[in-house]
Length: 353
Image (tube, rainbow, N blue to C red; front, side, top):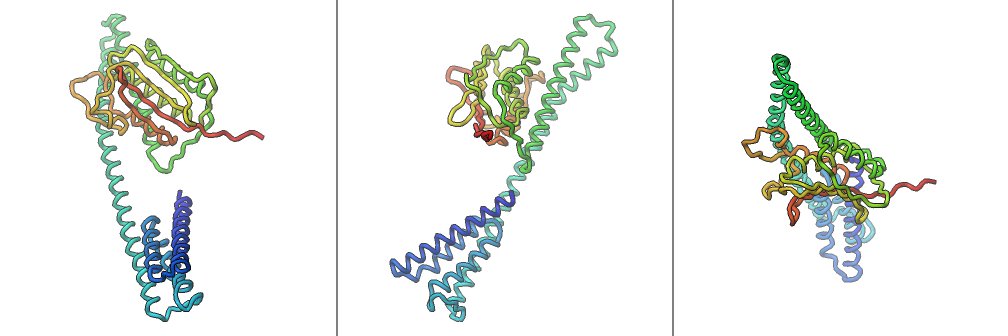
């Protein structure tokens, strides 16, 4: 990342100075204008200081500009002359411009970094409070059910014991999914993390997703639509599998009144498109903008831990898709229900020799 940034700044500096030199030559030879050349190079120094990081490139460009003006555009031509006061003033002016612009842009960028970091910390705090609130209910259920079975298990009927054990199992699965999502979003919430993409056959990926989904929602049928041709997409298969499972589970948990759940995959414009749609109650308009930020306020009154969601699952989806260079979106369908869509690039594979 640092090397790319350096090469980018060098390219910007060379390009802007080159353009300034070409325009100055045109001014002098074609139009016979010499007065505005210094102003043009001063503007070039300003742009370089504005578009590059730190002070170095602005100072270097101001020195190069001073030498270029002195050598090629002032009398005596093609010779250096720093005795003339005008040339010295031009050099001082351009170096001053570079220093001031560099200081200003560095301060602005630093303030922006501080603002973004503060925003991240605020979101982490909100997420922690929300997750803590959601985790408390299933933990209380697990503890209460386990304590009842240990203390009064002999006095309970087989159906009562089975119901409590099922409650413990369901809440435990929910907690495992929550922890998986938290681990994924915290691991990917770093600029240093790189996704290890491996060419993956979509048929195998979707089959794995449906198996995992059916283990928890055996009664929920998923209508599958896949292209006839085999699609191979570079991805981290485990992470994309997590995205699809999250989206399917989200539809079951929040698609009130849903009778149809569909998973559709197709190729379009060199991209693999994944869609999860249902015919449930849709997404409240006030929540559409906050679906993927990791937290939104919950309505009070619900005590069922499986009907609550801090938004962490969708935040994980957005983080994973973004780390893959894709896009994710959500919308309400005209005839009712919700549609979640994300895309991944269909990169070309290396031809075998």
